[in-house]
Length: 287
Length: 157
Image (cartoon, rainbow over all chains, first blue to last red; front, top):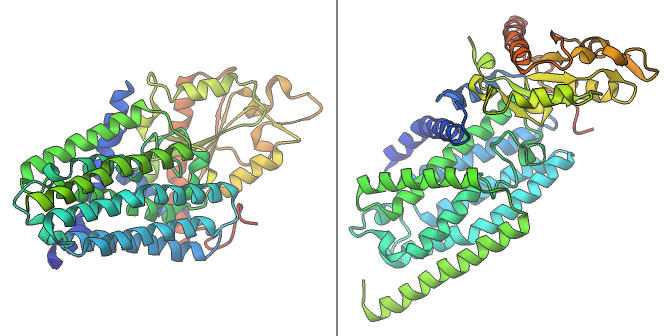
């Protein structure tokens, strides 16, 4: 385990996450023929939120949202420290359960709908994320991120189906259209901001901060597929994120039924087929 | 400049407007004017908003609604009345069900007259509101508190 990497993640992820969000908003604006906000706009936004008045609908919100942030940081920290991928995914899911509980803790119908949709999203992406971990295990014979990183061959050659399936759920995780059901980044609202409806001021700032940590962790996950060559990996990250922005700007939001169906079908076809072929090949030609 | 005037999120409420001013408010978000340049985001949620933009006058049915939206916004906050109806009640002032301008129910910080108010003057009004927002934040800091911290407001009850 590399504790130094975890510490670097805790310190640098908000900066990287905020910058990525800023670049995202700038590119989105240019795609829509607008000038767009300054690059540092996400930092201004979160800075402002921490200066605002704290309105608590119920005190338990504090606990749930702090836990959400803490567990996102823990899962990302474990990941970058080279820890067990299954434990990382477990902590990651737990973090989102805290977010859902936070949304359920107030008696707001908008918040409830957001919480339900967030749960549906968790159900939609969870199988694919676990399949990704299983795929990486089948190729490298280890669930430890440090071992997967140390692989001297490109994982993407063995896991193209899993990679495509992961890109599918990445759209859900980055809260991008067409799958931004529970809450959205855009001016057009998904039921007045869904899961974050009842969070205001500093608490909403914590939610945004957690989202930055989460995005950096997810980009780290994509990095694993290309870990054998850092240059290609960073290029792949840029292409993947740009593709996500294009998808975000070209697709309208879909219903939760289609979200669930399509992500499970992709996970089933791409993920399981990929695993099946790997299993067959490993019996014929050992890796 | 502090963060608050670099990132004013606004909520737009149509009190009893004829939709003329509403269309002009939405025009501010279009690529031609693009208020996101100033970090302005049009939220739909009072709990995320800093600037309350109201078009149209107050009538008997929406005075509670306007009050409620205003109360749900966390301080510091400003109110911009857009259009002559929001400023004074306009041509509807004498109607039996019209109370008058927005300032009959909540404190208004900036008045943007016009029928309909032009996008340029709406943007100008909101930019002026930002300096008032700064003042209010400074005042809030001087009082040393975060206002009504911890008290349950809106939503849950």
